[in-house]
Image (tube, rainbow, N blue to C red; front, side, top):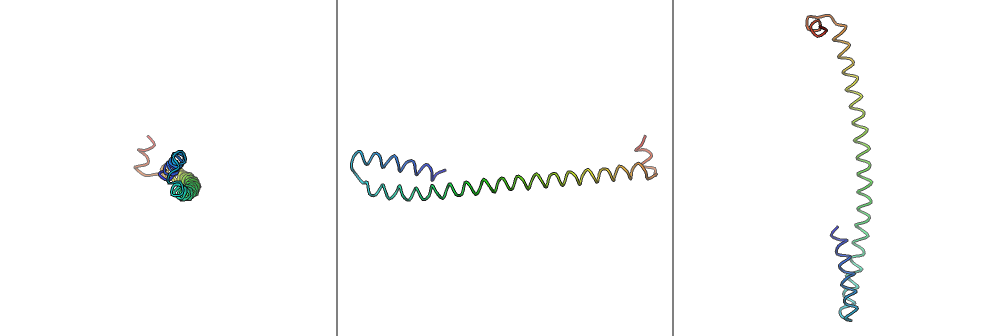
Length: 94
């Protein structure tokens, strides 16, 4: 975000300098370097967005898998409690 702000500030300063006819070559070099930084920032933002999307997909898949495992274990536990006669399960059924 700071790179983008620097780029906009460089453009503004260049326009002011053109109006006064001062330090134009220096400001043009600064603008060029800020352009490179802004391009790098856009690349990083794009890469970060794709990484976040991949992370979201992985988290959703892991959650679904864990939820299915939990449901299977609860079903197995319920079957054991119902079909295995013991003093504890007798009280659980009442």
